[in-house]
Image 1 (tube, rainbow, N blue to C red):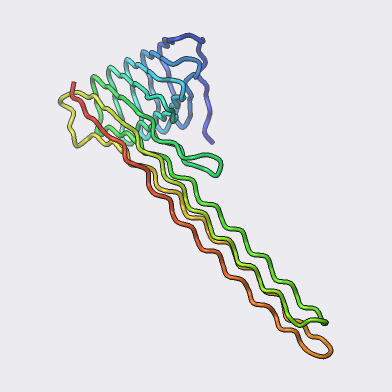
Image 2: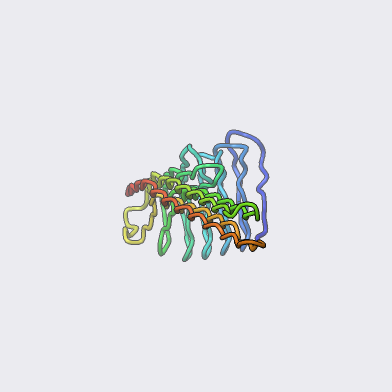
Length: 252
């Protein structure tokens, strides 16, 4: 289980911390009491994650180090995030994610958060940014049909099972983010990996099951036939994918 750490700071418009360290296999959340943060040094150890809340709109870092498979995860928000780094050293598999949130039956999917990433000096085999949109909410499952009534011995017809309801359509995926990356002129273009695809559409809702017909029944004089079962509901349609975002690369 991941260890959860909370970085405690004073409530002020801008916070200056000397060094922030996220330990291996742990998660640390930056404070949500301020919109702007200045960090002299930020180190996320192997497999660690630093979470940037939706209320933070600007983070400035003097020296950034991301270990193997380390993450900076940016919470979705309508406001864009400005991340400025003087020097970054990124290990293999590390990533900055600004992905949208998947939809649910209660809320729609969220788009990737718009991001401006400026790194003045970069040492990395690959710069990986994932700013894809969230997956659309799934379609509702259709209601099952009711079973037909059983026949009585004073009448000889069993009830037919009711049809299942059709499944609902999946909801649209959310859009990818608008990402601007400002990097040193000599950093190879083929080592820049930025994903801004729209989120996948929600899966189709399954159709409801058919109701069973009333069962046949033997009586003294005759045997009442069973009723026919209903028809299953049709499956809904998968939702459309969200629109792709955009990537702008600016050389410093």
